[in-house]
Amino acid sequence: MVATASIIVNQGLENSGKLIAGIAGTTFVQAMSWDDNSSAFAAAHTALNSIGAITNFVTNVTSNTTVGSQTIQWEATLTTAQLNGVTVRRMALHHGTSAAVTTASATLYGGVDAQSIAKTSDFSLVTRLQVQYRST
Amino acid sequence: MRADIPSKMTMEVWAYPGEHQTLEDLQRIFEGRILRVDHEQVRVLLSFTEEIVERGGRNGFDHR
Image (cartoon, rainbow over the protein chains, first blue to last red):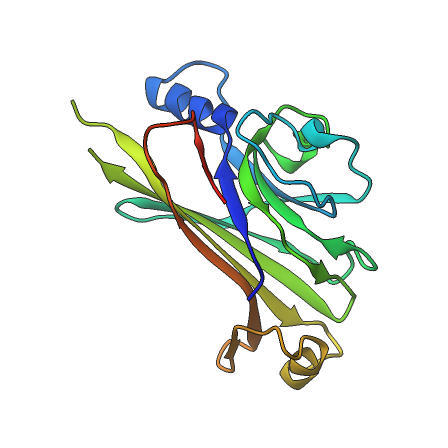
């Protein structure tokens, strides 16, 4: 099994709180990205390039966002035409639309690193990230 | 006081065959690292993680 590590960054949690509070201007999670950087996400990160320049990067809009009684799931597809020849190492969720997300945009909500998937045109990748909430 | 907090984050990565590929092609491409083959939906599971959110300590959660 591939070793994985996931995180919701501080900024993501803060943004969730702002949405609950109805703070104007707070954006929803609407985009997912894939890149080939082998560094780990950390709580203080706000953008993909918080660990340095990102060379290979693609962002797509999330689809099939589903909400259960205590879960939210985002799904997005890296198509057969995208990131071919690149080893995908990180997937991330972002506040804002895919058009607004760059490697430097402070839109990071959270993600998973430590992946190793050599992308080719032979397949597409569907990534699902689900956050479960619990009342305390 | 009640508050909803993230308690678990789960990730799945599925590979679906391209236009000229089959499920068998994918099994050959990813031989040895497929976690599950879903014949019904014609896909293979490449990665899965389910991590518990621990409260306290650092801000945010970070499980490694």
